[in-house]
Image 1: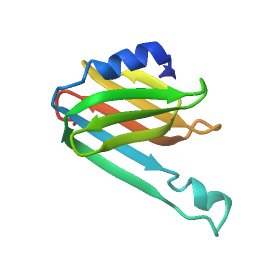
Image 2: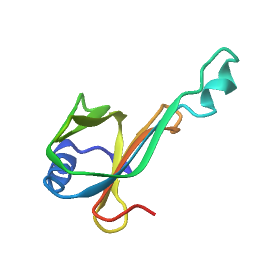
Image 3: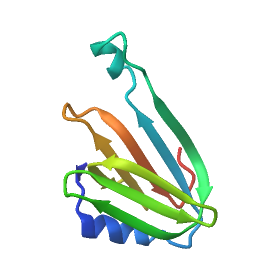
Image 4: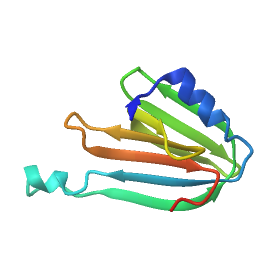
Length: 116
């Protein structure tokens, strides 16, 4: 993966507009939280192969971390804290956010075919 390049990633997000796509969206602090404090909460969210169609895609950020928003017919899907990106396999955009130690905190994966 490489650091998000705003123009390139925005263009890739827009390439999925008005198409049926499958998304994987995950947030986690996983076991990381409990390693440092027994009072910390372990939180996360996970959804895989949700079929959506979006009419608008926005990538905003300060050059260090970004938020990607996908406007669907009934609302928005968004992921915040994104730092890196890659094209995974063919036509699969993978965006991820890593903390200072390189641990995964958030992932947004978009594909025109169901994710394995």
